[in-house]
Structure formats: C-alpha cells, structure tokens
Image (cartoon, rainbow, N blue to C red; front, top):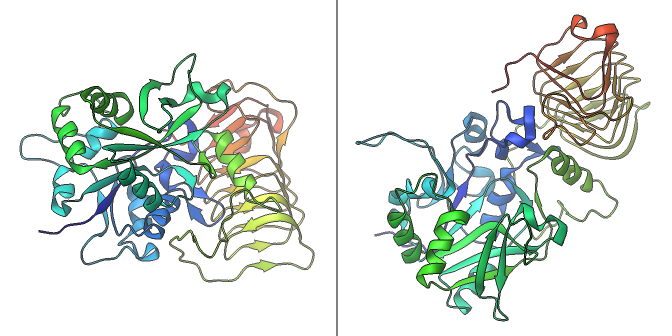
Length: 423
C-alpha cells in the first residue's frame, strides 16, 4: 500500500459569482492574475514549495480552462508516477450521481482517492486566495501541539471580522469556540479556510456527516469535531493573504503588485510562483510608447501609454491609447485613441478606437449593485465595444455590442449591457 505523510485536497470548483462577468465562463481559480498567472497557481506553487507532491484538485463549475491549465502538472513539478496532481471532477457512482454540494461533501466524494494514499495528514485548501505559505511549518505546529485539526488563521481588522469565520483561543492556541460570520464578533482571528486534519479524524467526521445537506467544513465538520472533544488549534499566519472574492479586492491585489516595493513579491527566488506559460514571443514596445509602473505579460505590443496597470500576454495597446489604473487580460486589443481609466477588461476583448472608459461621476449599478460597486468599468471576455463610445464608472459590458446599444454614444455610470447571456 502507498503511504504518504501528507496529501493536499484543493477545492477549485467554485463559481466565484461575486466576480460577476469575469467568471461567466470560467471557474474563479482559473481567472487571470498579475498579468501572467491564474489564481490557482498560488496554492499549487505553495504545495510544491512546501514539499507536498500529491495534490487532488476538485473541479466542478466551468472546469475546461482550469483542466487545460493544470494538465499533468508539469509547471509545478507535479507530474509524478506516484502522486502528482489529479483533477477530481464529480462523477457517476453505481447508485447515484451528484454534484459537489459543499466543501466537505466534495472531499467526502473523494474518500477513495485519499484512502489510496493512506496519508497521516490531509491538507484542505481553497484555490482562490493570493498568498505564500509554507505548509510544512504549519504541519510542524500541528505535530507539536498533538492536534487533531489545525486551522490557519489570520488577524483581520475588527470591523471586517463579521465577513469571516472567527475563532476564540486560549493562550496555547487551542480553539475554545467558533463564530461563523458573526454580527458582533468576539475575536478578530479569522479562519483562512486552510486546514490540516489527522486522517483518522477527517475520515470519521466525513463518514458520520455524509448525509448532512451541503456539508461544509466551517459550518459542520469542525463544530462536530470540536464538540466531540478533538484537539483543534489555531495556526496564526502573519504574511500577505488576499481573498480575491470581490471585484474590488481582485483589482486592489493586482494593483499592489505594481508598487515600487510591493507588499506581495512575485519575484523571490526562494519561493517561486509557477505557471503554465505557452507564449515565448517577446514584447514589443514602440519608441513612442510611455510606460509608468506596470506589469506586462509576454508577447505584448505597446504603442500607446500605460500607467499603473497590469497587462496580460498578447495584449495590443495601439498608438494614442491610454490605459490607467486598469487590468487588461490576455489577448485583448485597445485601439487607437481610446482612454481606459480604472477598468478590468477580461480576455480576448476588442475595445474600439477613440472610446472613453471610466468617465463621469460615480453611480450605483442598477443591475447588480452588490457586485459592481467599486467604481470600476468591468468588461467580460470576448466582448466587443464599438468605436467612439463613452462608458461611465461602475458599469459592466458583456458580449458583442454595437453603436445602437449606446444611446447618444454613451453608457451612463451605473448602467449595464449584457448580450452574452451570463450564466
């Protein structure tokens, strides 16, 4: 029988609905980040940098791009004969077939995969956070405390604590109580959704709670284990960690990469972030181009002006075009004379000539005010914007639009054009 000390189970099936049209056709962990990467690269790179060579990636929502990106795991050195990376979608069982309905239910449905490796410990991860963490140090903490479960936690501002599951611990870091997204939190120590379980404890809890609808770690498994008397500890992490679950946090964490001394450094030799990289064509920057504080992917052609922006691979910025405080993803073209201010433009879009994106005053988005609320112009993938139109702040465009979609040549702040049938 194969025996691994610790295997990782990476939950990457989420839709990421708070990212709006950015995740209409792609799972959140496969969304581009930092001009070159996809969000899932950070968790996968952390695994291999921490010496974990067996990773199960649980996929569900729009998995094609994620599966293609991961492949057999070559960029992360996870193409192993024993172990390596395995993509684990829901599948038809002999009795019934069912989708993953909660984080713990997804893990339960892959009990056989875990049993095959018979690990001592199982590391549970989300595939949608930006951070660097040595899971081996967390495992050493787990062993030193003789813990059954260790939860990675991070201090957050007290006013934000109600967005998270928070823990209350004693002086020995043993968890005394949990509060799941409390209205009036008693603590600001928030769970990061990263857990190490001793295999015996995880297996027993998953089997016991297998019929719990939408079984979830934070809501069901951990409270069950705690009540049963298992030793649950908080491992406090103080590095950079960003949940890029909203358009605001996604934009902000990309912008932080461009700071003169970035608080999250992508270039450290001792903790590399690996990714699948297909393009080897060089960038071309025209003699008339102006670039001030930017990250740029391979194969870009820049003839215009870029300031404080993150530019993906294969992007074309034509002459006279100006891009400021924006994220432009792979394969997009910004045509002549267009000015883009504070926008997120997804992959393979075409932005016409002499357009103005991000004009006017802020207005509440009339379609989905809870999602589009950061003053950004958001353009979904493969969208087309015609020449010469103005687009206000806090607006969203998705699909092939024509001049007729813009009354008087403008889309007012807070308005939306959705032509691609967002799912």
